Image 1: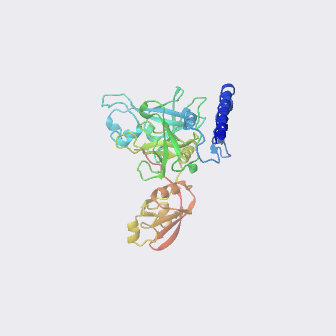
Image 2 (image 1 turned 180 degrees about the horizontal axis):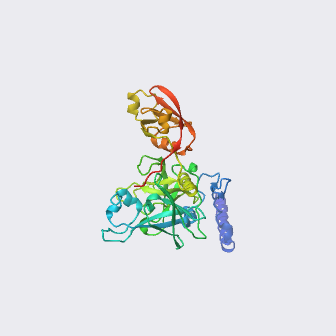
Image 3 (image 1 turned 90 degrees about the horizontal axis):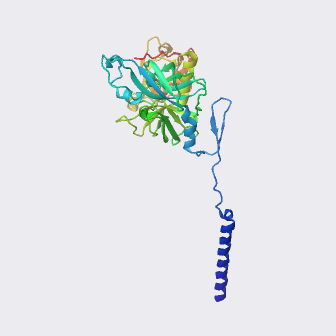
Length: 394
């Protein structure tokens, strides 16, 4: 037993000596082996021209700081000035939504004060030709619009067009060497994805906040006619309106638009317009000077389950038609108040927001089959789609 113990003690002594010698003369041999790292995804540009991140790994492949550095240069500060002789000249002066989302303004003015009101917001450069996306409510009624880039350059912006029904406006600046953000794919966004909000809150300077996508397809908020918002808990504050909501790869997936707030500051619920809708509106404003949407001339409301039960309607989802415009497309096709729309052009219709979006996407001067339930009877109506009348700004 004593012999075994002596052998063990000698072995330990020799091992310690070997480690000491290696640590002194060959320390690199004792360094820890490198840890495994997630493979880096390689950005590619498919035939559609929309940059996407291609990776088999669903987890983020780069720090959020890399995404922020990639997208931040394309986010600008927008200053909109408007001349107002009296407070009553602005019907939104006392509207809390206007105060929250338009940003900081100049002080109170009286009838003798000629100083312009100043509104601050944000914008995103999406084209090397100088086109910017922002919110309609940021520049609505402005006499002059100035933008400031993150590199300190400033320029006067020209208003290309606005779409109050989606709350999107398109600006253009004439500068060279413009940083441009890559557009993301909204169909790749899922609840729980990490996102960054970039803008100029409270005019303190460009600010980046982080969060996740907390919901998709939010509607019925009363902020605009066409609502399909991305909901996020990334902090959005007054002045962030028109700024960028980006994914972990630095691609633009939304235009920050509104917040749910009782105090005017962030409470963890913000809303952004999806980039596919914003891009569609921008293309229409740039090419045609307006956004072309389909229209059928009905007054819809969500189908109330109690109503469906009382009138023995054999569906739980759909849109109840409460009014039909005389001589409108739906009226000419035979639609009547009390009809329940369940399908348009082959797409199931579950709520009013979906009906508005599906009809708006239809091309004017084309025909579409609208499936309705009239009592217990299913009826297919062939509706000739008209162009949606442009909403007048109050």
